[in-house]
Image 1 (spheres, rainbow, N blue to C red):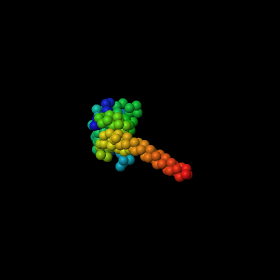
Image 2 (cartoon, rainbow, N blue to C red):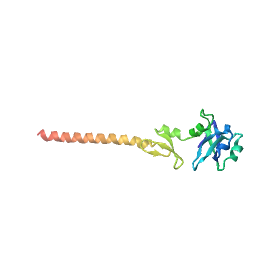
Image 3 (cartoon, one colour):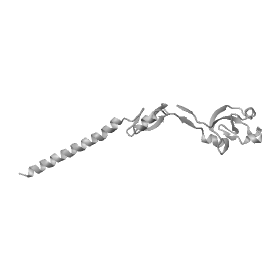
Length: 161
């Protein structure tokens, strides 16, 4: 489950603005040119800015609402570059971590995943399988050792007569 982290503010992005018609104090909120038109600008205002209606009158395209982290040193433009924060509650992480996995999220299927050494699992690493592999290796090593021992014994028994 995702939710917005604390200390986030809503920002309105006004597109297709004529920044020359904006008062000087609002020109600092111009954050660049509209993609399709190098003469019109994009203006960003915090949601509670009292100048929103004035800016809206000088902008002809859509308005998009987004979120940014509060009070970033470089102002609203820097806030937009930094994006916004989400908190993620992943209740399955404890079970995943306790079996040696690392918590993750598959954005394609919008689902929790447990990333394990053998492969990705839905909830936790398969500890039974992870114990079985070293156990099999151990028995194979014993088998190889005993096979070699039998061959060597047979070899020496051939020359003892």
